Length: 145
Image (tube, rainbow, N blue to C red; front, side):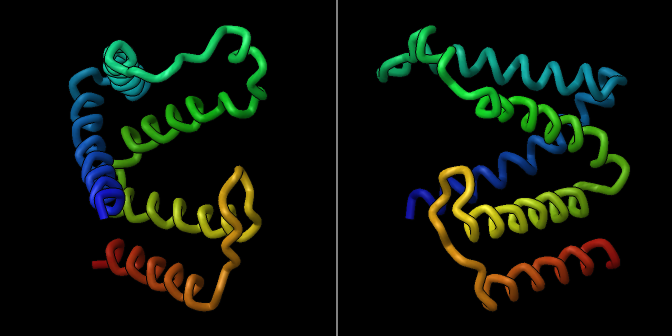
């Protein structure tokens, strides 16, 4: 149950982050600078967390063996933060976040259906597709009303 609660809290954090980063963009008058500032603060916090982390750290040799595409998570994260900063003032946080959730669920269904990126194989079913259709309907209602 704690994992579900933490996932819910992560959703709350992303929504709050949307507003905070949008305000940072307004203050800095530059979406790229706001994105960079957000990632810089996040990086500093993670360095602090590493200080208290008790697990093993990867060696430089092991880092060099990691496939190139496994490093693209940072690029995707930067794209997400930048997109949120640019799109939220244009389409509003409810529209932006509902479309983000739709995109996340759509890709998650595909990745699980084919077992890609190490996800457990979980074939698409009529009920799962029905959930996606309901989410699309929710996005429509949020955008229209």
